[in-house]
Image 1 (cartoon, one colour):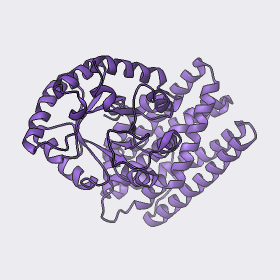
Image 2: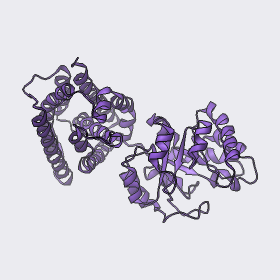
Image 3: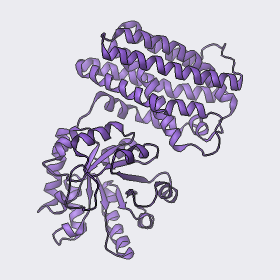
Image 4: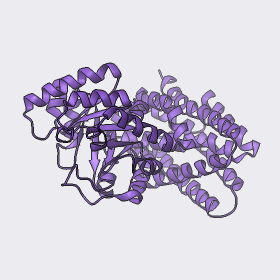
Length: 428
């Protein structure tokens, strides 16, 4: 789902009938779809509800066979009436929580953010993507906030935990540099709606996007491991942990094994730090490893004391296998391979922690400290720093080494799923 959505954001058409040169909107949309548009947002500010619904139905009928999502701007009622794929809301529209409650968990919800404060607040919401709006000034909308500009966009992309789409001033002259800033896609209005040939315009924009899309090693790794991540967040261990209903025996089982694992992991992190060249990168990694392991250790001790957990247990087959996998790469002395094998333990935990935090039950959760540790700003910042380090190291490696890094990473990601699965299934 998430990988499909990221792909759908690439060339995102936002409709505007006044800019369509008198042509029927269905004609514009169908031509644009033939040219390579990947998502369509129906935006109507003036027409009646009945006309809006009828227009949305016609577009849904045209786009559904092409597997192109139809998003409704602002109007949740219209989206419900036509079973659209989702809605896009702004800061002054219906609150996200109300939109999600009405639409349910499966529909797409996009949220415009007009400044960094908006974006930081959006990070705590389970929206499906954020629209960075506006990147540049645009005549399409006159009531917009101060433009982000290219540097502001880069900062927003770096800070966002959600996929991002750039909005405002997107055309053939700007989208190349915008895609190179790291955004997942661009939202286009007049560059397609007002083009003599919407199909040719979409084809041109699609080719520019393809040429300028940056795909870092970590982005490729995340896309490759998304099916594993989605299995993890769908696992009953994680679902019940988020709800606070996970059986104590299962949580105790998990913590006892994790105590074994993180002590080994902490040792390996220090060995990994020694592999790094002396300087700021090594210092940053040492500081992150030390602070991260201290935070995890304190959280573990609190939970061990609370639940009376006996940690004098033998490693499970999964724990032993996972430690053998990371130790093999650490013992190889190869920095790229070792870093890749160690990465899922911090990255997937951070993503799972953030996911649970956004989906947490409002009632008191007996495992709240676990969630808070892995969703914390410090843990998130440290993980992002290590991801940037991975990309730098991968960029300097050969293609063969990058592929071997991916293999080491994917094995470790599978062990992350197996770790939680064993903790759950071994308690009957």
